[in-house]
Amino acid sequence: MAQNTLKIALAQLNPIVGDVAGNEQKARAARAEAARLGADIVMFTELFLAGYPTEDLVLKPAFQDVCRAACERLARETADGGPAMLIGLPWREGDALYNAYALLDGGTISVRYKVDLPNYGVFDEKRIFEPGPLPGPVNFRGIRLGLPICEDIWSEDVIECLAETGSEMLLVPNGSPYWRGKTEERFNIAAARVTESGLPLVYLNEIGGQDELVFDGASFVLNADCSLACQLPAFEESIALSVWEKSDLGWACVEAPIVTVEEGEKADYAACVLGLRDYVEKNRFPGVVLGLSGGIDSAICAALAVDALGADRVHCVMLPYRYTSGESFKDAEECAKALGVRYDTLPIAPAVEGFEALLQPLFAGKKPDITEENLQSRARGTILMAISNKFGSMVVTTGNKSEMSVGYATIYGDMNGGFNPIKDLYKMEVYRLSALRNEWKPKGALGPDGIVIPENIITKAPTAELREGQKDQDSLPPYEVLDEILRGLVEEELRVCEIVEKGYDLETVKKVERLLYLAEYKRRQAAPGVKVTRKNFGRDRRYPIVNRFRDQGMVAHKNDEALQRATGQPRMSSMDV
Image (cartoon, rainbow, N blue to C red; front, top):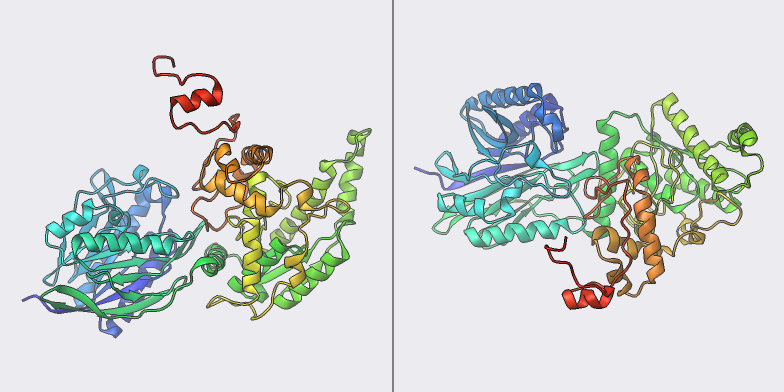
C-alpha cells in the first residue's frame, strides 16, 4: 500500500565542475544530513556529480566513466535502508550521451533523460547531449515521481506526458544561472506547468559561481494551487526538509522553510560577490590584488573582493603618475582604510619614462598622443601582473560594461587580470551599487558594515587621469545617455532609428554603435566576469571581430511602401536576389 506522507530533503548545494570525488562526498554528507532530518529521499541538482555546466569536458569518455562509477557507489550505499537519492550526471547508453537524473534506492538505479536541450544564450547542450524520449514517472516506494530536468518545464510537452502517465508530483532539478529578473521568470514558468498539470512542483536550483555564470539557488516549492509552500535562500547553500501529505486532492507540501530572497540591485551585488569568491576559491588562488585608483570602478571591485574573501586576502595598490590628483590619493587611501586591506603606493614614473626613453628614437618627430597615455596603463598592468606572479594572488580587473562596450580600456593595460566582478554592470549601475553597499551588506559578506566607498568617489566626475584635466565625458557621451544607448544596442538589439525615436541624437547613437563594433577584438581578450544582465559579452553575445556592418539609421519599415519611402527603392523579391 502506498504511503500517505513523504519527506523530501532539498540539497541546494555548490558543486565544482570536474571534481567528481568532491561532489560525490558532498552528496554523501548531504544524505547523512537528510537521514538526520528524517527524510525519505534527498534531491540534488542537475548534473550534480559532474558539476554544471560541464561544457566539452563531458565529452571525455574517462570523465563519463568516473561520473558513472561515483553514481554506482552511491547507489550501493542506499541499500542500507536510509534515504534514497535523486542525483544528476552524464549517462552514456551505447553511442548516445544523455543529461540524466537518477533515482538511487535500495541499491538500484533508475534513470530519466533530459528531453528539451537548451541551445540559446549561455546554453549549447544540443552539441553535447542527445535528447531523451518523452518520459514517464519513476516509482519510488509506491509514489509515481515525475522527473523533468530544468529546460523540460519551459514548454508543455514533457509535463503533459508526465501528467498523462500518472505522475503524482514534479521534482525538477535545475542548473539555472542568475540574471536580473530571473526569479520572477522561473516562478511564472513553474506556475504555468502546475496550472496545466494540476501537480505540485519542486524547483531545486544549484548555487555557486562557474566561470562567468552564477547560480543563485532560490529553490522553491509550489503546491497544486500554485501557492508557495517552500522558499530557500538565494546565494547560499541549504539542506532543507519538506514534509508532504497525500489527500483526496493529491500531494501537498505542508511543512517547509520560507525565507525572503534578495531581489533587484541587492541580488546583482550578491551575485558579483559569489561569482568572484567562487572563481578565486575554485581556482585555488590565495587572494587577489588590484589597482586602487581613487575611482568608482576600482573602489567597488575592492569592496566586492573584501566581501567575497575577507580583507586579509585583498591587496590594493595605488599606482600614481604625474596626472594623479591629490583628490585621488586621498580617496584611494580612505577607501583602503575603510575596507581594512593592505595598501601600497608604487609610483609608475620610472617605468613610463623608461618606456618613453626606449621608444624616443622611433617616435622622434611625432607628437605625444594616446600612445603615451596607454604606456601609463600598460605600466600599471605590468606591475600588477608582476605582483601576481611573485605572490600568487590573482589580479582583479575593474572595467565596467559601459567601458568594455565602447573600448574605453587599454588592452594589455587596465584590462590585465584574471577575473572582473563588474564586467556586466553599466557605469550608472556601478554608482547605484556603490551607494547601496554603503547602507547594506549581503548576508555572508566578509567586509565591514557601514560606509566602505567614500562619498567623494561616488559624487566626483569620472576620469582615467591619463592627461591633465581629463574627464571621461571628453571622449564619451554622459554615462546616463551612453548606458541607455548601449542597452538598446546590446540587450535589445534595436535598430539605430528605434533608439533615436526614444529621444537620442542620431550621430551620437551611430558613434556608439561604431565604437561597440570596433571594440569586439578587445572584448575577445578580456578577462571573464560575472553575468548579471540577460545578455553579457562572451557567452550571450557572439559578434564577429571582422565586421563592416553599420546601421545607417534608416526608418524601420513595416511594409514595402514604408521601405520605398525610406530608401527610394522597392523591396527586392526573392527573384531579384
